[in-house]
Length: 70
Image 1 (cartoon, rainbow, N blue to C red):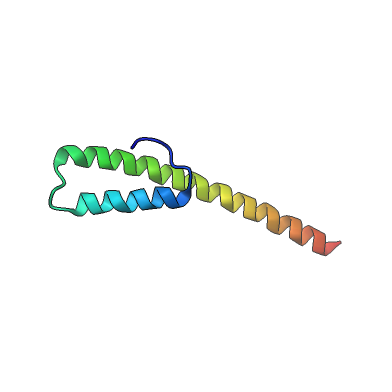
Image 2 (image 1 turned 135 degrees about the horizontal axis):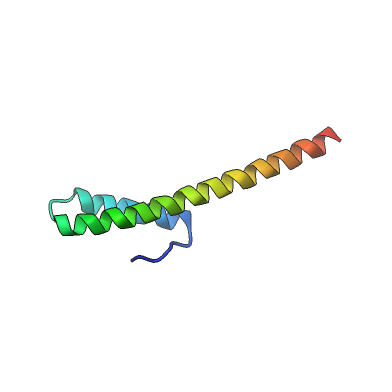
């Protein structure tokens, strides 16, 4: 379970599954710590992926703007 997801969508799906487990009546305090740790790892992965994509989109938009200016 503690492996790095390959895709953003996989990370989001796992986060949703963790949230469902945390909200269930069967979530005990010992599991809560593990779920929280994993959720933070997944959130960090998603944040890094989003910033990377944002940077790539900005570069593409700048290249497009530069090509239209010429």
